[in-house]
Length: 504
Image (cartoon, rainbow, N blue to C red):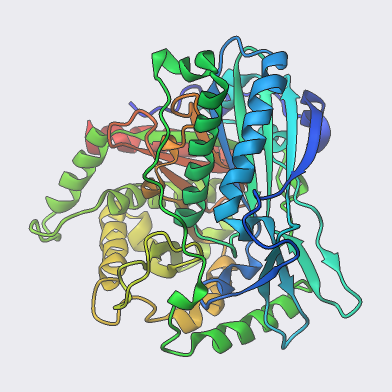
């Protein structure tokens, strides 16, 4: 059975926006600079590639990673964990210096770019929480606002006299749940890097932290999580920061820049802004649903045995998972938003890694964005019908297969922003965030595998769904989403019923 646990109707009454802030106490604030390797005072300008431009209007990415640390006291947190995390962050930033820099957005027609120098730093916050660690790391529906106090605030952008905006790119927060665990929270600007590149940084930071723990001889830290002993990952390669490895063979940069100038003018802002909890409804709930490898394999068999699908064609876990979730999510949203049922088409947006797909080499360690944005459209009658999963699978699979055809990647890149605007405004949209390929549960800071990882920005829209590999390590998939209470109840019911019907 799916890992839904109790229905949302049993959730406690949710307080006002600020109700959860009383659960956290800030005990330390500082700014962490990269370990020095550059000439003091040197300033570096990093231009944006056409891959980066679509993310200029994207709100900050928000990731939380929880670790079990039973019997971990405040004294130990302040004397061991905080110093190790700060020193290792400085070491990791040495190779990922743009994260400590700023996004500079001049008035049009000036081109936005990233600057970083030897004096840059990242805001670092340490806190303690009186929240329920077990509740926060459970999969069952819970208040979407519950984890907001675990996210670090990004400094507000500075505006120069000429209208140029200068915005920080990342902030981090470590929160101790005494005698329970630690949460690492990160906010970062997507224009800096895609998920693959950013998690390369996170794994470097984690590896450096493990090395610091070993250097301090912190045997107790090393042996948490059922005796799993930490080891330092020496295989991590240095990131490639040079945006010049991306070739703009179709002249996409000026097209996308002009669209961004137009859209940012319309939205009266030319920088992504921090996500405010006021965007959430008070009855918004978040939950995680786990689909095991067995479930996914059975869904694949169901799809290929339908009589329409060519049995010789492979069905990916991504296609099977998304084809299963898309109709259920759309139906559950109509419970709260019946007006969207009048729409004739529904949209599904996802991104695909273009490393290895462009006809010229992009290093696997390229630190930037290298994503194609893919758009799938399906008639409502097909998606909501008895064969909705099959129809969704065919449509999503066709879009995925186009990526590997000649001229497939970037075939519609000049319409990335305009198409996104259309689909986002339609109200009938599912967007995939995250990927099982990020291997988030291999991010080991020295305390073993994470107990739970959350993509928090899914809470800002009822159409955003996060994907991650199952933390159980058996080839399954974790699906995270946030819905209003009535929609969440409906989703839980339909998820269980559909999984039982297709995989029972």
